[in-house]
Length: 431
Image (tube, rainbow, N blue to C red; front, side, top):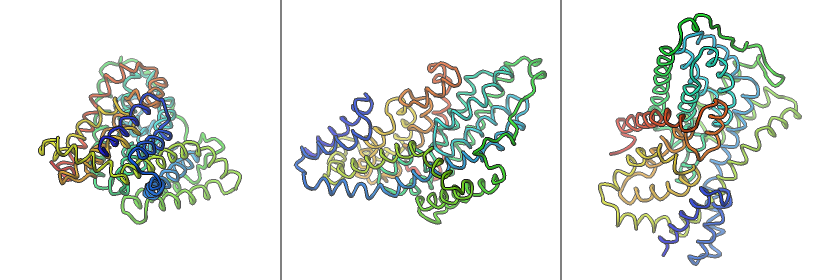
């Protein structure tokens, strides 16, 4: 009975979220409460939800302050001089322009927002691609691959969701796969260089010779920018990332302190600070509400025993050899799964079941989570029709969705495979 109700909970969540009949927050709270009542749990549900919220609180706090931290540094113009130097480095060489595009997208995506990345990078690079005669589909593909791979960062939406669903610290999930992820980013740079070489062959040599890049000057800052604090802000970013990876303090502490230092240094006036917080509050609170709702969802599924019951049922059906390869299988299907499942339905509905099933075969559930974030709404998020960011990307670039998917999906899948293979060779993902 519990296994059936658990399956019903997941199916209802998928149907409601994917069909947009209910928002993720509503579905994540309402569905498990209803099925929990059907299972005979009443007074216990509140305690289960409370336990779920306690487990998710550190992750939710980390995400809110990570968004505020990177948002403030973005407002301060930290990346503008870097953009200018990248464009000067690129000159009129299509190969260098393609590489510069990838690096720029990776840097801007440090804040974890696909929309911000596309809004900053695409408008900045479209005139350059147009004047040189490079195809916009190449621009869209490079930005999609770069932002997608960077989306695996510990404050990125998929990794946050995976850690929440598995009830593990986000650093336990991310830190072991740092080297494979770096390998994936290097692969993106090589792919970008390959794209650049193809564009170079297609271009008319006369166009290249007559073209001079009009890069934005580093001193063109708006009123929010703090050019004199550029090196201080860069140092803050480096310290935060190093502290996170080295585990000097819990992630939420690192970003809370980082945000406080960043906003105090850059915007010392109280009124300025309020405006900067307000500017980024909507995005931070939207994701935080989903995370806390997910805490209720997982709290009820675990507290009622639905997850364990489903895992035991699947264990009885699934061949042992298949069960032991769940991390590998998850990694292989993770990128294509971005075309079928939005991040909330996958990470809060599918992943807990996969991880629990893997554990019944004496395989680490964390490995399943690590394999999942190698593709599901990471390398695959900017080609998925289930996320608004994809349509923002193709709209800004002026390319067709089908054309974009046809060009980008094989390369996105290749990047996922590279990350997965590196993780297997390092013994992170067992086979």
